[in-house]
Length: 357
Ligand SMILES: Nc1nc2c(ncn2[C@@H]2O[C@H](COP(=O)(O)OP(=O)(O)OP(=O)(O)O)[C@@H](O)[C@H]2O)c(=O)[nH]1
Ligand SMILES: [Mg+2]
Image 1: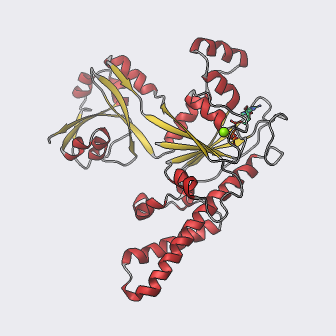
Image 2: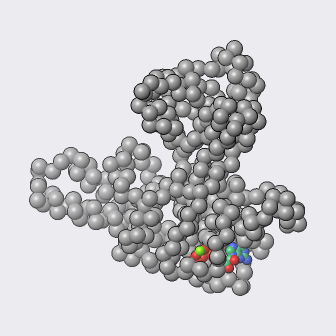
């Protein structure tokens, strides 16, 4: 999973990147106006993994991971004629966005439009993403149009289908509807995945707040999107401290829980993936798989050999394990199952793959 942190200049992208990844990149108009990318890999906090670790006492414990990419240089007006090469490429490869919006008041930090207005700022950048997708769709339609003129009735079905789809997408984009709102299925969009449509990607709006932030009443009514608030600067400072010092600091500021872990979790949940686990003496490990994936597909996440040679999956669920207390009790209760190729993996499944290569 690769999540891009985007936002207007000076909105606090790098500050939030530091908070989420415990990095210490310089902030403060560091990247304004230029394309710059920083990357860090972060384990996704999961109390279930902690609990499994306590039960199995493994040599090693591994959480699933998310990669955050701090992307500087995106601004209103940049997408005229379409986002350019490197920029569009970087954005197209992402699985989703953390869209940072400034809601903190601070006279010492200049705002590109002078005032703090979350709705206006979100729209400004969303407008760029919509435009970039529209340019992509229009260029596809132009190419296909030229093909029609050349080939006429010998045009392939796939191309005719694409024309239909691109027209549909064009209508939506022209009405400022992000493509994720169309409710298109993975199957429908599969042939066009390579285009990397930006407004199709899930988005978590992160309101970068501070103690002076008033309730903005900001809402974002789109599919595959949600909104969370975070005190960027304080959390970035906390992320630099040792846990004990952080605790003292948090008490001083009246913070009971860090939002950074909440944001990591929310951004993970938004990606239409969920976790399954493998357990044993050697390792307790969480893995990510697409929601709706079958057992062989999940096996493939662990190793391609396990998918190729898949025979069966031994499966029980984390919740049942906690309720019943042990694997033995699970067996007695009939909650320990042997599943075949069609089995759809559930959130929190603990699997052991039987395979043969
Ligand atoms: N008061 C206050 N200042 C903040 C907060 N978050 C970020 N800032 C300040 O805002 C300025 C911009 O923060 P950055 O994290 O560099 O913003 P950015 O979006 O990465 O900026 P560019 O990469 O230059 O576009 C810095 O001076 C930060 O210290 C906050 O919660 N409160
Ligand atoms: Mg920055």
